[in-house]
Image (cartoon, rainbow over all chains, first blue to last red; front, side, top):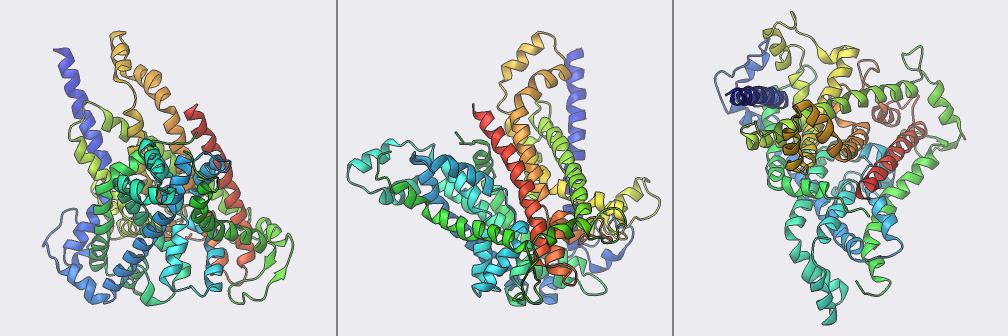
Length: 280
Length: 301
């Protein structure tokens, strides 16, 4: 009897704590959603109403009318993200194979260096990256954003592909080697098909990180209005005297839809990859 | 696996080239530039100044009678990172324990709700928070007014102390989901029979937590905390979007100071001085990384 009441008390109090925790995580998103879904005039009520009144989808239309380049900014962000993912994979697959399958002098130092490189953030290399891109004439190009962005996603992409390749049994490759396959065709014909789920996870990880880092990199690498990613583009909703909050929040919701959906799909892979370290 | 000696190196070549061109080369450039005086107004005009930039870091003051701009930024970074990581670790552990508890229902719902803020690009999260924290129309003000915690709306980002606290709470909010999920996966590796044995021995929840849970997740807790410290240390976009380092210099952490010195304060700043600051940033991150790599290695053996 006493045990069961204790259980009930616990279960209720945990539920309450979880709801408080969840509210903290959801408050800003909640306001973003209600601001996007209510008429612009309700953005100017102080204090802000806690519950939405007069639901409307007008802001989603207004966002595109107010900032006519919104689709271009979204497309730019998408291209930067896809570029970073593709470039990261092109480097992470062969590097991962090299580190997962061969024992050689450079292997352990390289593994450690990959972890170290993962600690770098755009802000540390912003100035020299800008100077280098300028010297190559790449400022205001897709390529500059892709190359600079990849620097920060390649390390974890490599790490994730090493972790995954280590779980693939080596026997198939040894048999293929006996049959006269070269190591290069093994990667192409055996490894890549076998690690498809991991490749998707790495691709999406790099895409989302690339998408997130665009803001800082674009601050210096992109000055041409037509090349801006969505994060910079959103500043068009800020005018000198005020901010069009309703359309801005609608635009934010539209542009977070892609990364959020993708992330929900592969979150498990990314967490697994991050928790199963493979340093020896 | 057997293959020619050169094979692993050929596979590694693209990585080496990418790191060389976009990591090593920029880093050496930072080191070189820190001994020159020049700015982006006239980048071809480079003057060798020796250690002057480093001296400038400790002597140049901006609106502060006690600390130089750089030392002030460094001190703020330490407090800012401390505050943000403390929230991330404490709430992260709390959240993970809740999600791991057998008494909690709807775990999947909570987990999904947690993943959503994780996947919103940081800059967007900061922009949403900029609205949420708005002094007149933000929902935080509205909530606090309704709960009678405050009497009048507060412009959180307009005063030095509240802006400082707001920015690291936002940063913690952005990093919290990662923390919860990682610690949760650590908690799930603890064998259940340990707790069952402790229950038979009559141990209470608190004893179980300190004698079983904490020691068992210590390695994960340590590595994740170190990772979080480095990431928080490098955090730029959230502060930049919320306050640009202001009011005055109250939220100017090292990354903000580096950006301002190289790209905004063209009159008294410059690339050389910003590069000297970057050296400190790199050194700090490097020493933290060494710690991190050491704990990773310790975990395995």
